[in-house]
Structure formats: C-alpha cells, structure tokens
Length: 402
Image (cartoon, rainbow, N blue to C red; front, side):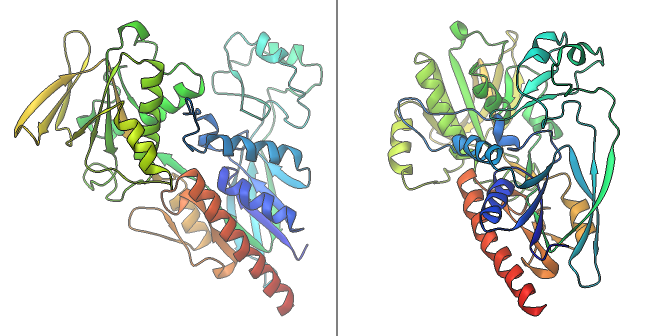
C-alpha cells in the first residue's frame, strides 16, 4: 500500500479541485463518482453572462473537467459509489467500492458521435468537456453498439466490487436541489409554467432560456420567487442556501437582455450579498427587474393556464394577485441523499439540517464542499483548496509517525 494514497468520493468541483491539487503534490489519488461523468450537477448549468461576465462560476466547472481530462495519473471510477468503510489495523482505511455498468467505456470512446446519430431514443448524451454516456432512456436496441468503431459500447456489463486501501478519505459528495413538490403551496408540477431555478439552469445550458410551453413572442411577464426551501423550517430548511439570490439575479438579468420587452418581478425577503462586485452588479440588475419585498402566500392557475401569485403588498398594506407567463421558484440547496448513509458508514455526524459534519482529519476522514453546507462554486473551490492543505499535513504526520 502506498503511504500517500487518498480516495475522494465525488467528482464535482470540490472533488476535482482536491484531486488536481493532490496529484500535483505527488499523491496517489482514486476518484469515485456516482455519475458516468465528472463535474457534478453544475456541469449542466448555463453561462449567465451577457455583455460582461457575472461570475456565475460555470466556466470554472468546465475548466476543472478539462484539466481532469489532461491528467492521466488519477485512478477514476465512474458510475461508482462507496459501499463499505473500515479501519485497516492502523494501516489506513479499507474501502469497498461498487461500480455499476457503464454502457460506454469512456476510456475507449473517441467522441466520433456515431452513437448519437444511431440512437432512436435520444438516450446517448455528452457531458460538457467530457465523453458520451447513456441515460435511462435506453431501450437496449443495440444500434449504438453496431456503429461504434472502437468497440466502446456494451449494453450488458456486470457490476463490479473492489476493495481499495487509502491513507485517508475525502468526501465531496455534493448536494441535491430542494424539491418544491413536497409542499403543495408552490404548485410545482401542476403547471409547466411553474419551474425551479434548477430547471432554468438546464434551459440556460441548452440556450433555450424558456420551457417549450412558453413562446418567446408571448412571454410578457416572468416572476422569480426567492427562498423556496430555505429560511423556513416548515417548508424546507431554516438555513439560507447562499446561492439562490446570486443565480436568480444573474438569470433574471440575462433573461431581460434576451427578452427586453418582458417584465420581470423579483419577490424576496432580503437579498444575500455575494462577491466583491455585488454592488455594481445589483445596481445594473435593479434597472432591469422589479423588486417586490414580499413572501408570496398562495399560488393558483387561471383559465389561461397562467400561474397566479397572491402576495401581501407591504407598501399598499393589502393582498394582491399577479398573473405570469412563467414563474421561477428559486429552490435552495438540500443535503445530499447519501449523507445519512455516508455518516453511518464512516462515523461522521450530521448537523441538524442533515449536512455532513466532521472535525477534518479525525480518523483520516475529511469533508469538503456543499455536502457540509450550502456553498457557491467559488466557495467550493476555496474550501477544497483549504482541505487539500489539511490532507497534505495529515499525510506528512502519518509518515513521520511511521
């Protein structure tokens, strides 16, 4: 066993940052990711810049993935997850990894695109900056197998289990977006004109900007509703998700640039400041967006299938209703769905909201990124860089003890 080996769970921006830093320091790294590609959720977010950069951080994800592609000395296991954890008699940590079938072997894929052309179900996708993969829409027709010149595709692969040793474990398993459908107040899922900020991120990624049901020519009014799933213990978490104001303001500004004749209302309790250029950015958006200091009370759908927001007007001291062509629920960050299992497996604790909590280095386990608290992309990079230093110090101390 190497005396300088680290296993990282999660290949989002936090995991990629730690992996890249450790490899540059000469450390042996195994990277385990549940998806068939690196980059995490934010890989499919769209750039929100118009005339100038608004520092949304999406380009940093793509850059990290490209850097990872150029690094050949990281052992990468995609479609994989941690299933076992034990101490190895003072010799580090023994980890059990289960790898689920990857229909397309990314190591053999040359990105020729023939599989995409052949697939009748549109089940072959490409991750930005990465290789092709197959999603759940696959019906096993085998047409992609027939056209692949590299033999990189196999519909029937077996799951594999592997035991690996590591001196320490870094958990960077990320988060999940809050799901507004758990509370009928938000009417999410009842109308295609009510979407989440996460949904809009994916529309920005495809450069469609609006869901198909909303025609650009007919989109006269859009509403952004803040703190969906945040700052309210009865409707989600009592914490501030820290990212929602930033991404909502950035997307609202971009939409106004794309559709200058569309009126955009922004419902909020207060605005979370972010970044050193916030004041100038906010001043610019304020000229494009109508800010309404109110927390909406109820939602409904009118006869024209338009969402109707009922809210208390603080200035007019009465309830009002407004109809929109599109309502965006700015959903926050929720704890990852694997947090409880990871905590139980590794001996970590969960905070009262369900995020992972650890005294980094205790027992050789470190936690970084949005799996421990809500973070913006830039914050994840900063946190992962700090954790890298802690890992290197821990490994150095282990060598000295030995």
